[in-house]
Length: 220
Image: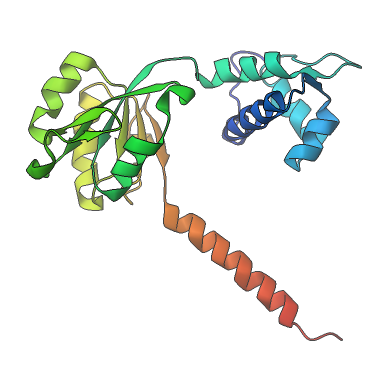
């Protein structure tokens, strides 16, 4: 694939899973693996793995397979896990607190450098080693620290305005938990990941209902 040819979003979304599985292999002391063996572990096809990785160049060797450490390093470089992208969190409620405290940002190429909330009572509180600041300080903070990632854990009706403001302040990527779908087409050059936890739960419930319906079907 040429450098000018766009790689599909579905391929890109599979890369973090490859990265995670390869990390598990390294933890087990496995240094090389074939596409067939990796496919069995990941419950995909060997052809799918080869096609995905070929989008970024040749990584394996015929008759040898993949060097696990090298492949993980290459995928990590593609994903940018060795970067130090400055990130801010807007909203220090229950979900925001969990993201601030429990996520190891350094493992994913990010650095949480600021947390903001409209609740003045939270001012000065430390979450994950980062101080919570009032929204009134957001603009000056962004001008000084130039964050390029913003995580939104705010009410739906507040999201459009804050998204527009952060874009003007130089934010280039949104990890959005606000229940408002940030329209990617309105933000050229900005990457958006709209996360709806409820959608995932409903998908799970559908699977349960579908399985139950299949089990209850009368046999002919």
